[in-house]
Amino acid sequence: MLFPTTQFLVFFCIVFLLHWRLVEWPRLDKAMLLLASWFFYACWDAWFLLLLIGSAANSWAAGCLLDRLPPGLGRRAVTALSVGIHLATLGLFKYYAFFVPELLALAGSAGIALPLPLVEIVLPVGISFFTFQGISYVVDVARGDARAARDPLDVFLYISFFPHLVAGPIVRAAHFLPQLAERLRPARVPLAMAALLILGGLFKKMIVANGLATDLVDPVFADPSAHGALDLWLATYGYAVQIYCDFSAYSDIAIGVAALLGFHFPRNFDQPYRARSLAEFWRRWHISLSSFLRDYLYRPLGGNRRGPRRTMANLLVVMLLGGLWHGAAWTFILWGLLHGLVLAAERLAGWKGIVTGWRGVLAAIVAFHVVCAGWILFRSPTVAGAAEIFLGLFAAGPAAQRATPYAVGLILLGLALHWLPPGWLGRLERRVGAWPAWALGLAAGVLLVAIDAAGPDGVAPFIYFQF
Image (cartoon, helix red, strand yellow):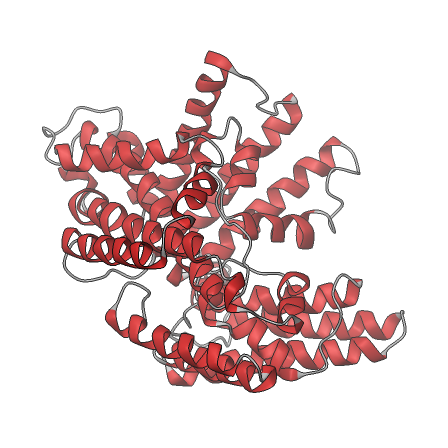
């Protein structure tokens, strides 16, 4: 079930009405939201719903045990077991089909026969996101950053809540669980902000991201050799805009939908292409993932507290694993390696990107092109395909075929969003929030119809559904 569809609109309207009718009976309301979330997930594959329920049950049981055990070896064992089950499940579904053939080929070259079957495994949608949610709950309870929820409804709803279930943002237990204990009131729902986020997300997804994918990015990346340098450059910039508009659109819609139900999700994007260093880029891009990697991997490894060499190694490990998290392919591993090397180089050089004026603009241009180099690896289906694009960027080739005013306009529009004044959305919300309800509803309806009419036929899945 995709956000920009009539099916989801009908589903959400039913959930919205039931939720605010049942809000006076919190436990019944949570049960309804949980069943609705399970139905939302089952629309992709009902069998994988069992996997989601099992993941949530693992986290809830571990939390209950941690709440009863004193500090010591027992708590560490429960934490390790629960996190191990989460990671083993993720590894089986996401990485078995990648690592086993590589391992068999390596063993075969050494004359060793390994009894490992080659099995085609379907990747459950959103498994990386709900697995990380489960891990964060267990680790936060073990650390004392969040209290264990005795009511299984709370934990199951936290991990399964449909707005963030498939592609984030990754919401921490300490942020979400207290909201389940609060008394929700319709008067406190930020209608204007929710409407702006949802409509803005639909525009970015249906107009910008889908338009660039259809007219520029997909055709060029499918056959790089048939396109010249100008098309390759435009496709590289186009994909940078496409993936930002696609993923930030999902996050914005998820945050807006949750807000209409009375829940607050943290911001997941903050104009990442205006960053003046790669470190700043990761403070602005997919904030919930970068903060997860920082708090649950980088800092436990020692962070920057054990000298320059250990810091460099930690950055490389974190980004390599971050690349592998995105997908089981060498292109994702190389993408993570590129980011890790540049982050390490920035740390070694002491570069923090704290510059203004023309130096700040130049730094942002350099950082953006480093990110674009990574996006070529990220988007290409194979390493050979990525190499073909890198070589084609600086080689003579066929005349431009995709340099249409529409494609160039979408790229410029997507990049311009990053240079709007900080806080512009809050100021717009205050102005729109002063409108009467009928005017807000009418404007939202007109914009929704216009976006639907202007977008390409059909709705492509969000890019991050595959992760």
